[in-house]
Length: 571
Image (cartoon, rainbow, N blue to C red; front, side, top):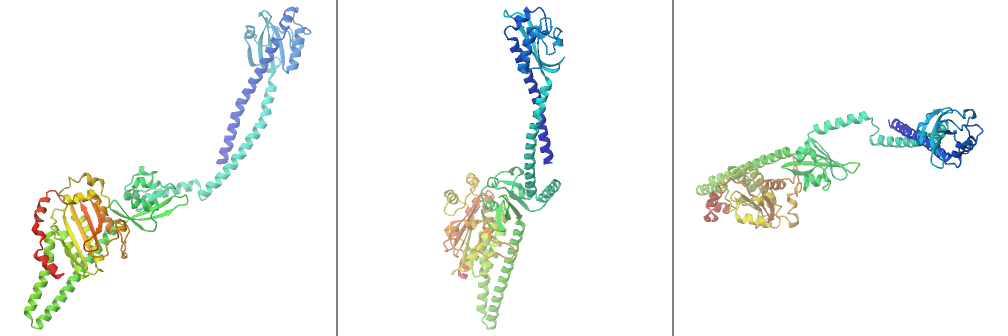
């Protein structure tokens, strides 16, 4: 195909060049004939001789002068005529005295004429000029012709040279076509055009049919391809194709992973509430192809499994503790110490009832209260004391208890794990409505505070009385100041991952949930010696609960109640 195109283009260009060349040679021949005629008409004495001689003669001076000019210029003929169109000169002497073969009206009217015409000597390029005497009176005309055979010979003589140039250009074109063809074959792996078209159709069907996100980047980091699943997972549009990845996604871990700033396999990232697993493979042209898998449902199942295991551990802990108490009670009864048995049973039942009552009195939502009771039992089995602070007072008017339970459960689990190895393992939980001091602290942006969303500041006054502050502190080793931003990054963890899922997502989800509601998440140093995580959710309560919660959290509530004293005694 390339050879056919190169040959056709060369032939077409040659034809386009020959067409104007023929016209140009004709013009040059006519101009030359006209110039000779002008020179002849300007010859001194020609007009005078034409008027002095008695008539046209083959031996006359006009014939002799015209023949000298014809021979010296190489013209086909030089004809001098009078005003009647009678020849006074002609290359063929016998035609002197005859009327010219073509109409002389235009030249005898005083106009110069140039054209190609057929005459007695055949086809020729002609130039005709009026002949005037010294006074300017028209006495005749001069007609000069150049044989057209000479013009054709010049044209045909130029053809071989032109064809030589054309063949040279064709050879260069063929060589270029061969080189381009070989390079194209290497780039297409020697596939035919039909195969390439079929592969493209198959690729389009595969990319848009699989349930895994595929993102292709070019060498500049711009989006080259986004399949349907990637558009859904990354919340992109088809119009984003061609834009830089960092501009389309915005700053964050997801953009860093896809751009290659973060290396590794099966990298975790969170985008729009979805947990994604990303893998990136560079391509030969300097770009890359990244695949994305949605692990949100799997992560939720893993957390439900962890919750089920936590419930089983809580039941096992209660069963173990219940068996120990039954053994103690049985021993006291067998020893006949009935009064001591009654006192022990009353104290044991009272402590558990006090713990449950303390949580249910301060946490109005049953879902969160049940979560804290279960977490307290599991923590006790691990030797960790989990209690709510005296400032805890949460009304039963939550907008989304499940999301708050996710935040609280993640923070409590991390706190219990951190405190389990300390000298005095303790975890404190505080849940209360947000007040003005909390909002002022957010505006100042204390050390360790992650960025609050722009919408939070704008809705600060509107959210007064509807926000929640959640604090979880532990007695563990704490979080170093240089790592307080890293703990909220996806995939960052100091714990060994379980078999069914990966670590490093709990705190990342906490931050995303907080930011989704216009809130913040931060970590600092706790009074217990470990870490203190603080989450502020400005719009977690239904409006109208501020007064009720303020009344419930009266000054007297700061004093330790009887259940709290019992819980402290047990601790």
